[in-house]
Image (tube, rainbow, N blue to C red):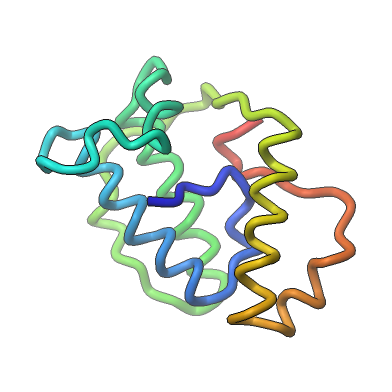
Length: 130
């Protein structure tokens, strides 16, 4: 499970679809509707949020918004209710590490996207993160 703290605009189509699916799985875990993944470390920051279900719903809405910009039709009805303005803190170091990891993935599966992003200096976070 990979729940990026990076803005979804950096993901290639394959990565964006995977993020949508994995975020929906995370939502199910937080709702108590699965048996697996309950202790996955990627869920810790959502679990520590004052409103975990609103946080994952807010996360999913931003992923869906990016998908809509690209002409994909992710089903909004799959997103749980609520929103939150309370952001989750993520370190610059973690953002840089995630971005480096994304670049290694893009270098293999989306070389053009890799070349577009490899010299980027300012990395945007997902809107839920600060």
